Amino acid sequence: MNQVSTVARPRRREYSVEFKASVLEQCRQPGASLAGIALGHGINPNMVHRWMREERQRQMLIDLQQTASAFVPLQLQASAATGSSSVPNLQRPVEPDTTAQTIHIEIQRGGATVSVHWPLSGAAQCAQVLRELLR
Image (cartoon, rainbow, N blue to C red; front, side, top):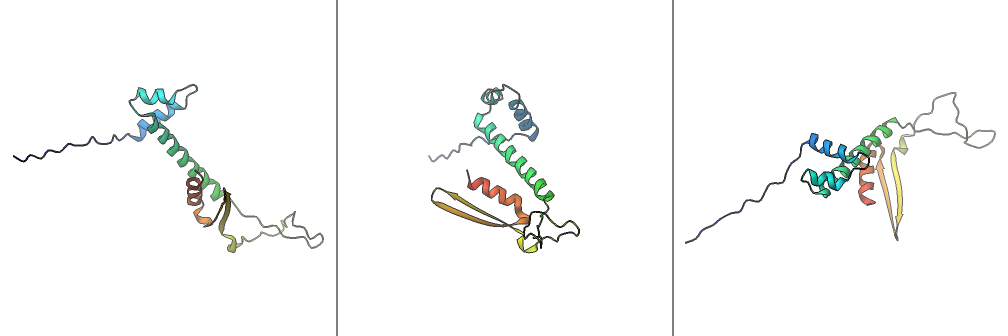
C-alpha cells in the first residue's frame, strides 16, 4: 500500500503596519527592553530589530530625498582683481552647470578603492546602494 502524506508548513506570520508601528513605539520609550517587548508579543527580538532597521532606512531615504530636492548648486566665480573665488557675484543669477549633474564618490576601504558615478537625479538610490555597500 502506497500512501503519500504531506505536511503543511506553517505560514509566515504577517503583521499589520499598525501592529509594527505600535511595537516600535513601545521600543522607543525610555528604559524599554526591545527583547522584553518582542517576547511579550510572542515575536522573536530579531524580527523587531529588522523592523527598526527597515524603518530607519525608510526614514533616511525620505530625509535624503527632501534634502536633495532642496539642494541648489552654487557656483563661485573668480574675482578679476584678486583672482580668488571666495565671494560670488550676486548681481546676476548663476546658471547651474549642466555638465556636473552627477554624484562622484570615491571610497577607500582596506586595500580596495571603489569609485561611484551616479546621476544627481538618483541621489536617494545612490545613498541606498552606498549604505548597503558600507555595511
